[in-house]
Image 1 (cartoon, rainbow, N blue to C red):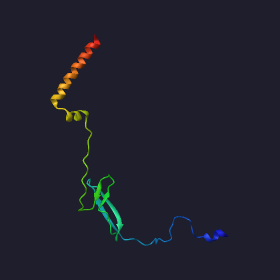
Image 2: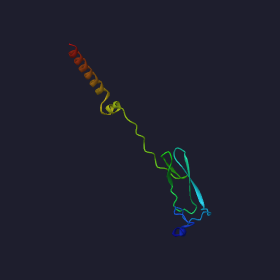
Image 3: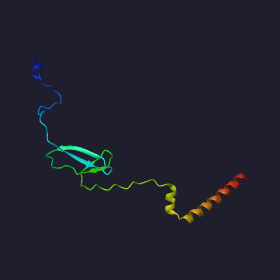
Image 4: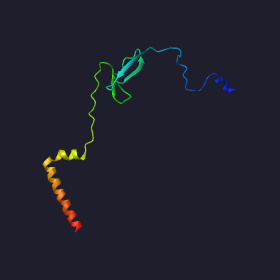
Length: 114
């Protein structure tokens, strides 16, 4: 008999405070990223603080029309070993080292074959 007091009511996550038939007025806000992707989000019509930027699905920062977007950081490319060496040595120094190492290699080969 004690379970009869719970009849007609469930113990789930459903809230009885919601008015299911009422609709909230919304405004659709469209953000555009530098890749020209458009993201449209619904906000309440009476929302005061709508963000001026939003993260696009591509990972870039999207903004409202007329909002200046932050600059993209420069893309760093990997440098080759040769490019790093060229920063430290001149072309003449590299040619000199090349000839020196070539002579050492020939000398090593002549000792090894003898």
